[in-house]
Image: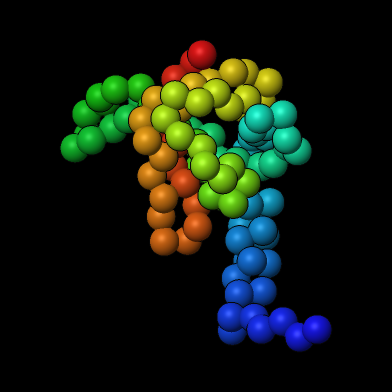
Length: 102
């Protein structure tokens, strides 16, 4: 059986996987599945040189959390969080999740 691949799809997948391994600073588990690397950001949000709200956000590959939605729980570094806002996808296949402690 012959499979047709989109040109560059395999390479793009390898790049995304390498990016995830290189930049991940936390480990997440969603719905009891396999652990995977995420980029967790905690701290004050700065805008125009002033500190505003506290940021609790996570970037992760969209294919690791198919169908994830606002209000759902996710475990990151053994801490339970809830998704505070609708997930925001980007053009690279990653999602930005705004979190709150569950």
